[in-house]
Image 1 (cartoon, rainbow, N blue to C red):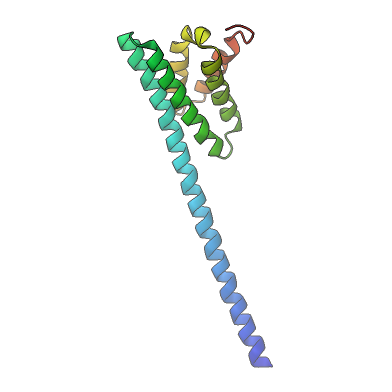
Image 2: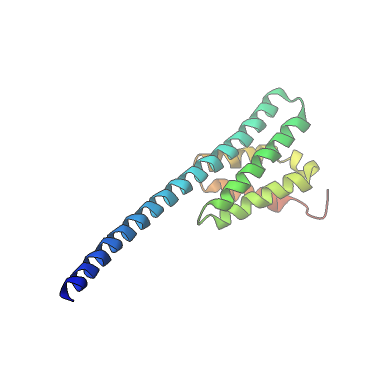
Length: 144
């Protein structure tokens, strides 16, 4: 009986160690996935900003560049949804994307402010989100 009890205690310790190892691996992979999502989010915003810069430098083919910005913002929107603790940032990006889709005529006059906000976000400056919110707040939601 004593032998079985010792064997059970040893197995319990082994299983506890194995459980701790798997928990550690899960936490590590979760942190790695969050880092990847943040990188892809920033890259999507950088692509949108780059597309706006291309339009500003050439001043041709507005519709193509505008649609590319919408696509890049949609991608950023998807990635920011996957990032933990980004709820306020997610809201700002969602609203910006919505404004680009719903109010293209109004957004045409605000592209430079959006571009500056996106660059600030990519540069890890929180004021970029404030700039984006200002643009979104300046849109007449009952207009075109």
